[in-house]
Length: 515
Ligand code: MSP
Image 1 (cartoon, helix red, strand yellow):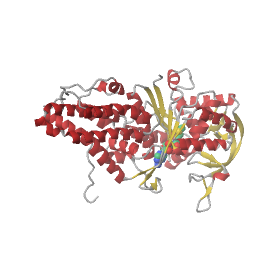
Image 2 (image 1 turned 90 degrees about the horizontal axis):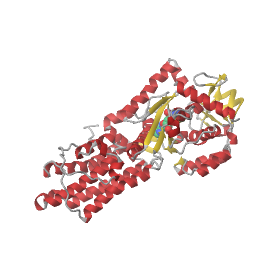
Image 3 (image 1 turned 120 degrees about the vertical axis):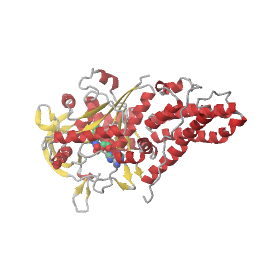
């Protein structure tokens, strides 16, 4: 089995400070990357910033600085976010790097050689905010009578010489590709949307502009700047060494296993990108997953409404593991979701503090107090103990199945089924009553619980790395015994090890008086 995994985030436009939407996309990839590493895969996890194009150029002008200085500054904000969120990317690409320019110009040459590019002129609508072209029939009217893109972005009329990509010649080939790769686009509903879009026929795509400078020049005609989406998409191969298709990283990791994207940029990834790659004689990625959008307390998030959610503020208020958990648990991954402080606090207090935290805390306290602060040795397991242990063992398989289709909420729910079962088992076995009556039985029950918690904490690492590590520390699980391989090896917790007085890892959130 090929145990390599290449996962990418979109590269973020540097026109803006990072917000919850950016944190969300990368978080999903981070959880997946961590999961795959624990599952024995060699992982390459890529993120970065999209720094060319008119949108960034305009933002730099508005800030009164040259685009390079501007992108240097804003790109750093995204790196800072990654640090705060504890993201474990292997590479952070910036499209203004020389390695990327070389890759863009090379893919252009390949497309030219294959006959997929021709020079013409473009006359039509363009939305700088989306960096996208729109047909007249797609536009809607703003209350003031001006024209808007379907996304609500203002459009402007553009008329200029332009190179085109012969996308119109690709519909049959793309449909065949989707057919042969039924899981290329997930979720299924999004796949159906893309398939019907392509079935409706494709128009040639303008892939160069002449009215601004901030981008990669077209090889052989530097009056033209490459369309920012062709430039941006190419980052996924630049990062693994393209144009050197013999590079070790390229050979190992391309085609990518997963491009994680928001639903708004699916068309670029699921239609244009495979067409570019196949036309260039390169392999298409294995999967594009389109997730949904967050609203804030029911409202669309936008700068003009002033309701942008700052991930740093969330982490400072609720804690990193709590925010990571909430974002991946609250909403079925793929659907839109609403961020509300009430829901955040609800999950934090009930799922984390009450269910998981309390389980770990009370079991470890009983071991500390009643077993001389040592991991007890179990006696023979009863049928109830065995049911508990079997459920803990089965969790990995269940979680893996959900992670393989990016169903993070279901993966977490599969873990919580075992957490709730464990709490039921504690109540039913009442180990606190056994100290006097039957200490041997108490030891077996507490050991069964500790062993169950070991499974749980190993499984929650990709989602909540810090709290999981602290629980594993308390259990005395060695750093090299925290992978899924360790779970599958059959080795159980050793008895006799010291158990320190436990400290709670999931504090309750208490609203401040008057807040
Ligand atoms: N630069 C392009 C991507 C190029 S990839 C080759 C881009 N950048 S972006 O910064 O505008 O958006 C990046 C991601 O953030 C997208 O996946 C988008 O869906 C996501 N989100 C932006 N706002 C969001 C929410 N409110 N909720 C969830 N995700 C959202 O597009």
